[in-house]
Length: 467
Ligand code: ARG
Image (cartoon, rainbow, N blue to C red):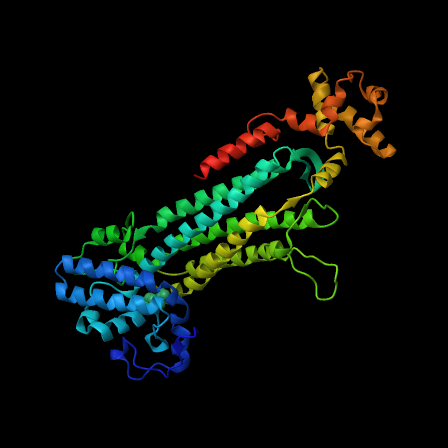
């Protein structure tokens, strides 16, 4: 319950006319949503104003009523923004709280506002409006994170590190290339959120409780005023489905999954075993018992929070799956998971944009790690193949060379020309060019490859895509 919500004994509800006794206090608390849906207040006011203007244009309410409603809503907005609005549990939810206050300010005009609508189409409209703004704000956060990634990638377009498969050293890549992989993931996340926004941006208002309304309404006018791209075309669907919220949470869960993978790598990279990066102290925390510790709490927490967001997606899917048409009170449960998803993404992305910008790289440690584990073995096999040996035979010859190097505890290149030639007579003096890390990197010179000049080009393209 928010600070502003007074603990009141059950009072007559807006709809209490057909009831013989007031609702039980526990039931009132159980069914009320005002403690969390007050977040929708400004969007609720906006939607109500659009509705009232339409009712006036369609001659359902008078111009005088509209003026009283507009003036009342101005006061309400000022109260909301100044933290002065008095929320009441008895009024159940954000919609009835605002309507009650409006009626206190505007009299009968306030009571006329609810003509030709229901809370069912009202809440669906508010949530869509709110989510639209949230998606836009998250888009801005994603761009900031992507910008940090490109900046760092550009600086490290030629910084060599081991690329891994199965967390075993596989082939050399550049750190810039590795970072740009995350850029691509977040680019798809932005696309997904944009797609979701398109489907969320339809107007439910006008569906009323479920069957539409007998008043001569103009839904297009309301849609236009509220910036919706179109109408929800079926009144039953308009008030009942929350697929737009589910879709958003699915896209959000993927964002957090990408954040979680990045987090996992940051944790590994900053562990002394790798020592690839350092995070500035302002992103780390210490231990209350071990004085020497500097822990990567931020990426660890983000990795944990990815589970929480996926949980919200599951909650919404379960919320929806067995509901008969049309509106059911179950839908009131859509808000907390949705709000928490947005808050979690907002915080996490904001902090990650700064954290990535602050990453300090130990290029020496990355290079040393790339020199262990025969990362250029594939390059040697490709070298032999280009000289005419079938790739399978080349693979076999190099595998034997790797065993010999391992037995000697040295790198492939350290075997020397004579010994390398013992595995294949095709080996020539030019072999050392392909066995070096730089030679390996430079040879992967195609779209999507890790050659430094390709990474620089990818970063340039990426930067342009952010404008
Ligand atoms: N607080 C409700 C919700 O979030 C508003 C709609 C209530 N409608 C109803 N028929 N009880 O869904």
